[in-house]
Length: 138
Image (cartoon, rainbow, N blue to C red; front, side, top):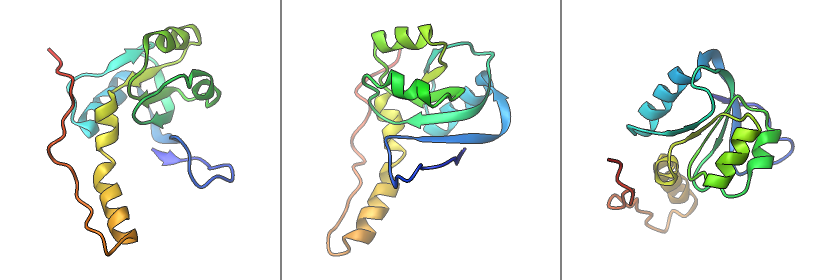
């Protein structure tokens, strides 16, 4: 996935990009699970859908369905989709991979440690290796 554009903004709540080659959603889910080191994800939409444009919004995804729909991505990768938001997404024909709040945020922690360490050289920035997902999947 590579960034499309920032529309004059230097930051945002997520990212949108294009895959080098179209993939089936089933294949893309395997990639997401591998990169996030998870065994399961929740899916909204058809697993047979072909995707190329991907939106990513890590962590909690509260009440941002309309904003996400405007992106017109083939799939949204996020965490913590609430039930009623999921129902709206189904109605809008959206395709969403919910990989969990913890799993979608933990991947950025090493990079944040690096950025903060570089920015505040006089402070010791430490990564929390003890925290784990409070949810257990059975």
